[in-house]
Length: 352
Image (cartoon, rainbow, N blue to C red; front, side, top):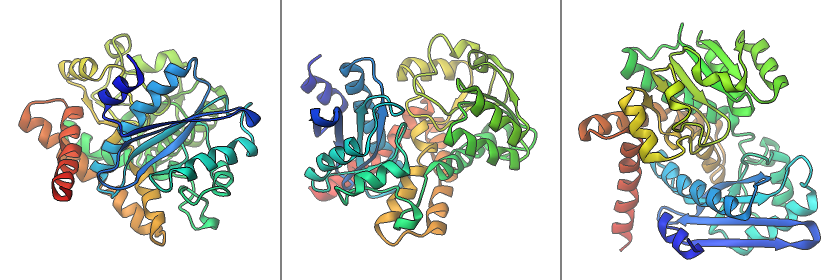
């Protein structure tokens, strides 16, 4: 499939390739849909195995941001960017500033924030070259690291699912298996610990798993064992595509709700298989929208309390998704799409 066919398949408006040999920059910016406003989405730095893999990832992620921003009720479209490289080895201030110049050339059509492989400090470097950056430190007038509110939003969505499946949204005594103890997974574990949930955690980084386990009294299992542990809720908080034809048969949970993006490897196939197994899947872009909501508040005198209150609405949004799914007899991921597309269609009709 050529690039224009790929863009048409996902419904993209623009794909921008950025190259600067002097600093070894290879980046791709994807603008999916700007019906609701400028494209908002983070920049990911990752050592992709190929340029094709990077293109596929940025196309999927940017499309997800359109739906995430729409369902969350913020006035931004969807975009995403990827920098091809290992963030532990290839990142430099010069590379980040060069990337910032490319963002600036888009003159506000794309607004970047942080993502996997980028930090608040990185955003400050990018900010030296462009104003179209959010997710900045509190000291710079931003909302700081988005991981805490991303985790809070997932907790809210998780509770909405628990209300439907268990008859109560209390997390007390619930067994939650968290895959990935990075920033978001760690924050979620702490929140669940405060809610008196029982935790099982795993991470490919043993030290991250140990730190999280110590702080939350969690049990640690090997990364390849996390799928098969007996639990009430499985929470993917690492990479995408972890729910697939190999892992879904291993699951022993009633609910899936996590911070990771694009958790379903093949959306139609895997969502239907979860339905068949009577496992409720909380669509990732619904429940992990807390970070996007938080940064959206940076454009009008950031208010932490207002941002958190907006993130808390994910509880009700997830409730609406469940209601649509039940009414239409469709999987929750399809119900989430209905919810997101409805707002975009109404806005597009109004503009026309």
